[in-house]
Amino acid sequence: MNSRKFLLAGVLLMMAGCESSQPGPGFEQLIVPILNRHCVMCHMVDGAQGELSLHPQPYAALVGKASTQSDLLLVAPGDVEGSYLYHKLVGSHLRVGGEGDSMPYQRDLLQSNDIDVIEQWIVQGARDN
Image (cartoon, rainbow, N blue to C red; front, side):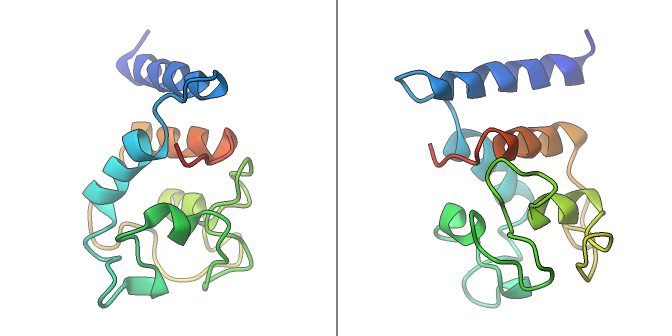
């Protein structure tokens, strides 16, 4: 099993723990570190790019919120194709009626394992846990 599949399998197992009575790693443990590494530097309260501030409450800013660049929600729980954040990260945002550049802007794109983590989090309901 290659390292990417091994990592994804581990993430899925961790997220599967969210179904139990004891919440497993979720938004704070898996998604916030990715946002902090790649997104927050441009999406802060003062001068937030694209009218999106990911600090201090990234979950509230993303989940169930309308995109200002498309007709999609930024994150539609359970619906990757309906989540504009996902499209901006993988470069398919223009196909869904969006605008601008892929994210992160003028920085290295996210690694495929980070995108897989975000995708699985959305598919599993984009829980705040």
